[in-house]
Image 1: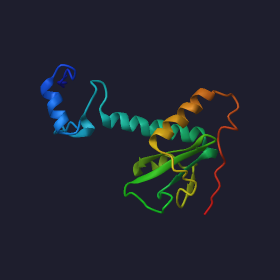
Image 2: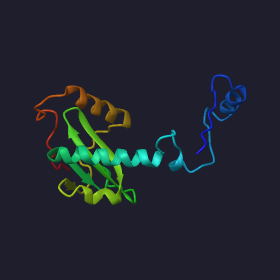
Image 3: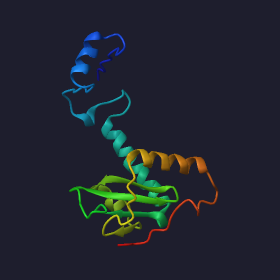
Image 4: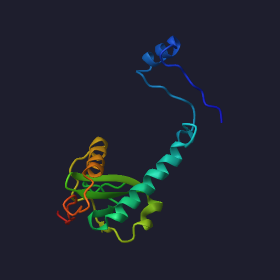
Length: 148
C-alpha cells in the first residue's frame, strides 16, 4: 500500500485547489479502504461498533435498541443502540447484522427518550462517564422507561 503524503503548509497548489473547493478534498477511492497506514476506515468502524456493543452489554439495565428514531423513522439496514445516563442519552446507529449480538438489551418500538443529543454531546457524555470513574455507578445511569 502506498500512502501519499501532502505537505499542506507548503503546497500552494493544494491551498489554491482547496480554496476553490471550499476546503473540501475529494479523492476518487472507496472510503472504506482509506487507511492511516495501520487500519482502514472500515476496520475502525467495525471496532467502534463492537466496542459500543460491549459497553451496552456491560450496562444492560440502562441500554436499549430500536429500529426507529423518536419520529418513528427507520433507516434500512441500521438500528439504534443507546445508553441512558445521568449526563444524557448516547446512541449510535449500528448495522443490522449486529442486532443479535444484543439479545438481552431492552427493545423498544422507537427511541422514546431521545433528548436531541448530537455526536459532540455523545463524546462529552462518554468522557464524563470515563472521568467520573466511580466504583458505584448506580447514579450515573437513568432507568429506561417507555414513555409516549
